[in-house]
Length: 168
Image (cartoon, rainbow, N blue to C red; front, side, top):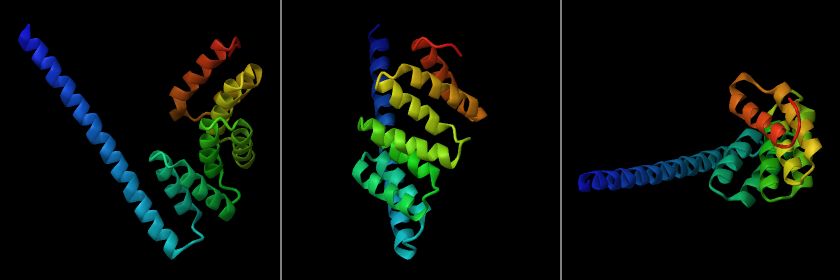
């Protein structure tokens, strides 16, 4: 029994160490992305993709204000950049700025009506505001536009529809 407890504690410590290592590796990877994108931006300040990538890295590192600044710049440089609207909308959603989030998701959808992710996030924004029928309708739009690789999100949308009292 004592051996089992020691083994379990060892496994627990090992797993925690691996999770911490992975988190540090991911942060290091994002820091490297920030460094690379900063260099690209210095060479070409009109590179909207570099601003998007750096903004996403800032977002991963929980530097949301820096992320928003870069996403704003990406949109300024390329007003048709649906991914930048999606990412900025996600930040607004997490900050409970629902009108701004929905505005960005709508912008991404207008640019690319087959881009499924903004529909899902917009559904979440409606759900957070307790606008359940709008959430259901938006989740249905997500399901209709989802790519095959979005299977887990499709299942999440279906579950949300059911929980909110809708039918699929």
